Length: 321
Image (cartoon, rainbow, N blue to C red; front, side, top):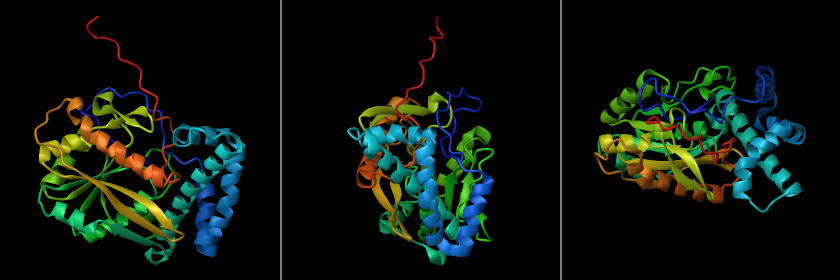
Protein backbone atom coordinates (compact mmCIF):
# COMPACT_ATOMS: atom_id res chain seq x y z
CA UNK A 1 0.00 0.00 0.00
CA UNK A 2 1.22 3.48 -0.67
CA UNK A 3 0.10 6.80 0.67
CA UNK A 4 0.77 10.18 -0.81
CA UNK A 5 -0.62 13.39 -2.14
CA UNK A 6 -2.89 14.03 -5.08
CA UNK A 7 -1.93 15.90 -8.23
CA UNK A 8 -2.68 19.58 -8.11
CA UNK A 9 -4.71 19.14 -11.27
CA UNK A 10 -6.23 16.13 -12.93
CA UNK A 11 -4.05 14.70 -15.64
CA UNK A 12 -1.02 16.70 -14.54
CA UNK A 13 2.47 15.39 -15.43
CA UNK A 14 4.00 13.03 -12.95
CA UNK A 15 7.68 12.89 -12.12
CA UNK A 16 9.26 9.43 -12.17
CA UNK A 17 8.55 7.83 -8.80
CA UNK A 18 11.64 6.60 -6.97
CA UNK A 19 9.82 4.50 -4.38
CA UNK A 20 7.42 1.62 -4.08
CA UNK A 21 5.53 0.38 -1.07
CA UNK A 22 4.79 -3.04 -2.51
CA UNK A 23 5.86 -5.83 -0.18
CA UNK A 24 8.99 -7.82 -1.00
CA UNK A 25 7.34 -11.01 0.19
CA UNK A 26 5.01 -13.09 -1.92
CA UNK A 27 1.40 -13.84 -1.05
CA UNK A 28 2.50 -17.36 -0.03
CA UNK A 29 5.13 -16.00 2.37
CA UNK A 30 2.57 -13.69 3.93
CA UNK A 31 0.20 -16.61 4.39
CA UNK A 32 2.93 -18.53 6.22
CA UNK A 33 3.18 -15.75 8.80
CA UNK A 34 -0.60 -15.47 9.08
CA UNK A 35 -0.71 -19.20 9.85
CA UNK A 36 2.10 -18.88 12.41
CA UNK A 37 0.16 -16.12 14.14
CA UNK A 38 -2.97 -18.27 14.34
CA UNK A 39 -1.03 -21.25 15.74
CA UNK A 40 1.83 -19.75 17.77
CA UNK A 41 0.66 -16.18 18.38
CA UNK A 42 2.73 -13.02 18.16
CA UNK A 43 5.80 -14.38 19.96
CA UNK A 44 6.01 -17.44 17.72
CA UNK A 45 5.80 -15.27 14.61
CA UNK A 46 8.48 -12.98 16.04
CA UNK A 47 10.80 -15.96 16.59
CA UNK A 48 10.61 -16.93 12.92
CA UNK A 49 10.87 -13.28 11.90
CA UNK A 50 14.34 -12.89 13.48
CA UNK A 51 15.76 -15.53 11.14
CA UNK A 52 13.75 -14.43 8.11
CA UNK A 53 14.99 -10.85 8.39
CA UNK A 54 18.59 -12.04 8.87
CA UNK A 55 18.35 -14.05 5.65
CA UNK A 56 16.99 -11.09 3.69
CA UNK A 57 19.60 -8.66 5.03
CA UNK A 58 22.54 -11.04 4.49
CA UNK A 59 21.59 -12.51 1.12
CA UNK A 60 19.45 -9.84 -0.56
CA UNK A 61 21.72 -6.88 -1.41
CA UNK A 62 18.68 -4.89 -2.52
CA UNK A 63 17.42 -4.88 1.07
CA UNK A 64 20.67 -3.39 2.35
CA UNK A 65 20.69 -0.84 -0.45
CA UNK A 66 17.12 0.28 0.14
CA UNK A 67 17.80 0.82 3.82
CA UNK A 68 21.17 2.53 3.25
CA UNK A 69 19.73 5.83 1.95
CA UNK A 70 18.16 6.70 5.28
CA UNK A 71 20.77 4.97 7.47
CA UNK A 72 23.64 6.85 5.77
CA UNK A 73 21.95 10.07 6.81
CA UNK A 74 20.89 8.99 10.28
CA UNK A 75 24.20 7.26 11.15
CA UNK A 76 26.75 8.88 8.80
CA UNK A 77 29.90 7.53 10.50
CA UNK A 78 28.91 3.88 10.74
CA UNK A 79 30.33 1.30 8.34
CA UNK A 80 30.87 -2.43 8.02
CA UNK A 81 29.35 -4.59 10.74
CA UNK A 82 27.73 -1.57 12.40
CA UNK A 83 25.89 -0.65 9.19
CA UNK A 84 24.85 -4.28 8.66
CA UNK A 85 23.44 -4.33 12.20
CA UNK A 86 21.58 -1.07 11.54
CA UNK A 87 20.02 -2.56 8.39
CA UNK A 88 18.97 -5.64 10.35
CA UNK A 89 17.40 -3.63 13.16
CA UNK A 90 15.53 -1.37 10.76
CA UNK A 91 14.19 -4.33 8.75
CA UNK A 92 13.33 -6.22 11.94
CA UNK A 93 11.27 -3.31 13.28
CA UNK A 94 9.36 -3.14 10.01
CA UNK A 95 8.77 -6.88 10.18
CA UNK A 96 7.40 -6.58 13.71
CA UNK A 97 5.04 -3.85 12.58
CA UNK A 98 3.70 -6.08 9.80
CA UNK A 99 3.30 -9.01 12.20
CA UNK A 100 1.54 -6.84 14.77
CA UNK A 101 -0.79 -5.47 12.13
CA UNK A 102 -1.81 -9.03 11.25
CA UNK A 103 -2.09 -9.95 14.95
CA UNK A 104 -4.60 -7.16 15.47
CA UNK A 105 -6.73 -8.43 12.60
CA UNK A 106 -6.41 -12.18 13.22
CA UNK A 107 -6.34 -12.45 17.02
CA UNK A 108 -8.29 -9.34 17.92
CA UNK A 109 -7.66 -5.92 19.48
CA UNK A 110 -7.14 -7.32 22.99
CA UNK A 111 -3.73 -8.67 21.91
CA UNK A 112 -2.23 -5.21 21.38
CA UNK A 113 -2.51 -1.92 23.23
CA UNK A 114 -2.65 1.44 21.44
CA UNK A 115 -2.49 4.71 23.36
CA UNK A 116 -2.95 8.31 22.27
CA UNK A 117 -0.88 11.06 23.87
CA UNK A 118 -2.34 14.50 23.27
CA UNK A 119 -6.00 13.50 22.96
CA UNK A 120 -7.14 16.70 24.70
CA UNK A 121 -5.14 18.76 22.22
CA UNK A 122 -6.78 17.03 19.27
CA UNK A 123 -10.26 17.34 20.79
CA UNK A 124 -9.76 21.08 21.28
CA UNK A 125 -8.66 21.48 17.66
CA UNK A 126 -11.68 19.52 16.42
CA UNK A 127 -13.94 21.67 18.60
CA UNK A 128 -12.96 24.70 16.54
CA UNK A 129 -15.33 23.33 13.90
CA UNK A 130 -13.10 23.76 10.86
CA UNK A 131 -11.95 20.18 10.54
CA UNK A 132 -8.56 18.82 11.49
CA UNK A 133 -5.66 17.76 9.27
CA UNK A 134 -3.35 15.11 10.71
CA UNK A 135 0.01 14.99 8.96
CA UNK A 136 2.07 11.90 9.68
CA UNK A 137 4.86 9.82 8.10
CA UNK A 138 5.81 6.23 7.35
CA UNK A 139 6.82 5.68 10.94
CA UNK A 140 5.92 2.96 13.41
CA UNK A 141 2.63 1.29 12.57
CA UNK A 142 0.35 4.10 11.54
CA UNK A 143 -2.42 1.62 10.76
CA UNK A 144 -2.45 0.23 14.30
CA UNK A 145 -2.12 3.61 15.94
CA UNK A 146 -4.84 5.15 13.81
CA UNK A 147 -7.27 2.74 15.48
CA UNK A 148 -6.91 4.84 18.64
CA UNK A 149 -8.38 7.85 16.82
CA UNK A 150 -11.83 6.40 17.37
CA UNK A 151 -11.68 8.17 20.74
CA UNK A 152 -11.87 11.53 18.98
CA UNK A 153 -15.62 11.15 18.42
CA UNK A 154 -15.27 12.45 14.87
CA UNK A 155 -15.15 10.57 11.55
CA UNK A 156 -11.58 9.88 10.41
CA UNK A 157 -10.63 9.94 6.72
CA UNK A 158 -7.30 8.76 5.33
CA UNK A 159 -5.67 9.51 2.00
CA UNK A 160 -4.49 6.08 0.85
CA UNK A 161 -3.82 4.37 -2.45
CA UNK A 162 -3.23 0.63 -2.62
CA UNK A 163 -0.58 -0.23 -5.16
CA UNK A 164 -1.66 -2.87 -7.73
CA UNK A 165 -0.27 -6.29 -6.85
CA UNK A 166 0.37 -5.43 -3.20
CA UNK A 167 -0.36 -8.44 -0.97
CA UNK A 168 -0.20 -6.61 2.37
CA UNK A 169 -3.52 -6.54 4.15
CA UNK A 170 -5.05 -3.85 6.30
CA UNK A 171 -5.60 -5.24 9.78
CA UNK A 172 -9.38 -5.10 9.36
CA UNK A 173 -9.15 -7.25 6.20
CA UNK A 174 -8.16 -10.32 8.23
CA UNK A 175 -11.57 -10.75 9.78
CA UNK A 176 -14.92 -9.10 10.13
CA UNK A 177 -13.73 -6.00 11.95
CA UNK A 178 -15.30 -2.72 10.97
CA UNK A 179 -13.12 -0.42 8.91
CA UNK A 180 -12.13 2.31 11.40
CA UNK A 181 -11.65 5.08 8.85
CA UNK A 182 -12.91 6.14 5.46
CA UNK A 183 -10.37 5.86 2.65
CA UNK A 184 -9.90 8.57 0.03
CA UNK A 185 -7.93 7.52 -3.06
CA UNK A 186 -5.41 10.19 -4.17
CA UNK A 187 -5.65 8.81 -7.71
CA UNK A 188 -9.40 9.40 -7.80
CA UNK A 189 -11.21 12.30 -9.45
CA UNK A 190 -9.14 15.49 -9.12
CA UNK A 191 -6.80 13.61 -6.81
CA UNK A 192 -9.47 13.35 -4.14
CA UNK A 193 -9.27 17.11 -3.58
CA UNK A 194 -13.03 17.67 -3.61
CA UNK A 195 -13.56 14.86 -1.12
CA UNK A 196 -10.90 16.26 1.19
CA UNK A 197 -12.38 19.75 1.08
CA UNK A 198 -15.81 18.31 1.85
CA UNK A 199 -14.42 16.34 4.80
CA UNK A 200 -12.81 19.43 6.33
CA UNK A 201 -15.83 21.64 5.74
CA UNK A 202 -17.87 19.01 7.57
CA UNK A 203 -15.59 19.35 10.60
CA UNK A 204 -14.11 15.86 10.20
CA UNK A 205 -10.55 14.55 10.56
CA UNK A 206 -8.33 14.09 7.50
CA UNK A 207 -5.04 12.17 7.73
CA UNK A 208 -2.31 12.65 5.10
CA UNK A 209 1.23 11.32 4.77
CA UNK A 210 3.67 14.23 4.66
CA UNK A 211 6.90 12.44 3.74
CA UNK A 212 6.29 11.18 0.20
CA UNK A 213 5.21 12.85 -3.02
CA UNK A 214 2.79 10.95 -5.20
CA UNK A 215 1.82 13.04 -8.18
CA UNK A 216 3.29 15.81 -10.29
CA UNK A 217 6.17 17.95 -9.14
CA UNK A 218 3.72 20.85 -9.05
CA UNK A 219 2.46 19.41 -5.75
CA UNK A 220 5.90 19.32 -4.07
CA UNK A 221 8.37 21.67 -2.46
CA UNK A 222 11.89 21.33 -1.04
CA UNK A 223 12.86 21.30 2.65
CA UNK A 224 15.93 20.10 4.53
CA UNK A 225 15.85 16.78 6.34
CA UNK A 226 18.83 15.07 7.99
CA UNK A 227 21.31 17.39 6.33
CA UNK A 228 19.99 17.36 2.79
CA UNK A 229 17.10 18.59 0.65
CA UNK A 230 14.06 16.38 0.11
CA UNK A 231 10.81 16.88 -1.77
CA UNK A 232 7.60 16.78 0.25
CA UNK A 233 3.97 17.48 -0.63
CA UNK A 234 2.54 20.87 0.26
CA UNK A 235 -1.12 19.98 -0.26
CA UNK A 236 -1.78 19.52 3.51
CA UNK A 237 -0.72 23.09 4.17
CA UNK A 238 -2.58 24.41 1.14
CA UNK A 239 -5.75 22.66 2.32
CA UNK A 240 -5.27 24.20 5.76
CA UNK A 241 -4.92 27.65 4.23
CA UNK A 242 -8.01 27.17 2.06
CA UNK A 243 -10.25 25.89 4.86
CA UNK A 244 -8.79 27.36 8.05
CA UNK A 245 -8.31 23.86 9.46
CA UNK A 246 -5.50 23.43 12.00
CA UNK A 247 -2.78 20.85 11.42
CA UNK A 248 -1.52 18.39 14.01
CA UNK A 249 1.70 16.53 13.23
CA UNK A 250 1.42 13.04 14.69
CA UNK A 251 3.85 10.11 14.78
CA UNK A 252 3.12 6.55 15.93
CA UNK A 253 5.81 4.33 17.42
CA UNK A 254 6.14 0.87 18.94
CA UNK A 255 6.38 1.54 22.66
CA UNK A 256 6.63 -2.02 23.97
CA UNK A 257 6.48 -5.69 22.94
CA UNK A 258 2.69 -5.53 22.61
CA UNK A 259 1.97 -1.81 22.62
CA UNK A 260 1.96 1.22 20.34
CA UNK A 261 1.66 4.91 21.08
CA UNK A 262 0.49 7.82 18.97
CA UNK A 263 1.87 11.20 19.98
CA UNK A 264 1.09 14.75 18.89
CA UNK A 265 4.45 16.22 17.96
CA UNK A 266 3.38 19.71 16.89
CA UNK A 267 0.43 21.91 15.99
CA UNK A 268 0.83 24.02 12.86
CA UNK A 269 -1.30 27.04 12.06
CA UNK A 270 -1.30 28.05 8.40
CA UNK A 271 -2.65 31.55 7.59
CA UNK A 272 -5.69 31.61 5.37
CA UNK A 273 -5.67 32.54 1.68
CA UNK A 274 -1.96 32.07 0.99
CA UNK A 275 -2.70 31.20 -2.62
CA UNK A 276 -1.33 28.51 -4.95
CA UNK A 277 2.42 29.20 -4.94
CA UNK A 278 4.46 26.45 -3.27
CA UNK A 279 6.93 28.95 -1.80
CA UNK A 280 4.24 30.30 0.53
CA UNK A 281 4.02 26.94 2.29
CA UNK A 282 7.74 26.26 2.81
CA UNK A 283 7.78 27.42 6.47
CA UNK A 284 5.00 24.99 7.40
CA UNK A 285 6.49 22.04 5.53
CA UNK A 286 9.75 22.87 7.29
CA UNK A 287 7.99 22.55 10.65
CA UNK A 288 6.89 19.06 9.67
CA UNK A 289 10.44 18.14 8.60
CA UNK A 290 11.83 19.40 11.92
CA UNK A 291 9.28 17.31 13.80
CA UNK A 292 10.26 14.25 11.77
CA UNK A 293 13.94 14.84 12.55
CA UNK A 294 13.09 14.92 16.24
CA UNK A 295 11.18 11.66 15.86
CA UNK A 296 14.00 9.77 14.11
CA UNK A 297 16.47 11.09 16.69
CA UNK A 298 14.42 9.31 19.38
CA UNK A 299 13.26 6.28 17.34
CA UNK A 300 15.91 5.75 14.63
CA UNK A 301 14.72 2.27 13.65
CA UNK A 302 11.06 3.16 13.25
CA UNK A 303 11.19 5.26 10.08
CA UNK A 304 10.36 3.19 7.02
CA UNK A 305 11.09 5.15 3.86
CA UNK A 306 13.13 2.65 1.84
CA UNK A 307 14.14 4.92 -1.03
CA UNK A 308 16.50 7.81 -1.67
CA UNK A 309 14.49 10.78 -0.45
CA UNK A 310 17.44 13.05 -1.17
CA UNK A 311 17.51 12.43 -4.93
CA UNK A 312 16.11 15.52 -6.57
CA UNK A 313 13.98 15.15 -9.72
CA UNK A 314 15.54 16.23 -13.01
CA UNK A 315 14.99 19.83 -14.03
CA UNK A 316 12.21 20.46 -16.47
CA UNK A 317 13.20 21.95 -19.80
CA UNK A 318 12.47 25.63 -20.24
CA UNK A 319 9.22 25.75 -22.21
CA UNK A 320 9.99 29.24 -23.47
CA UNK A 321 12.86 27.97 -25.65
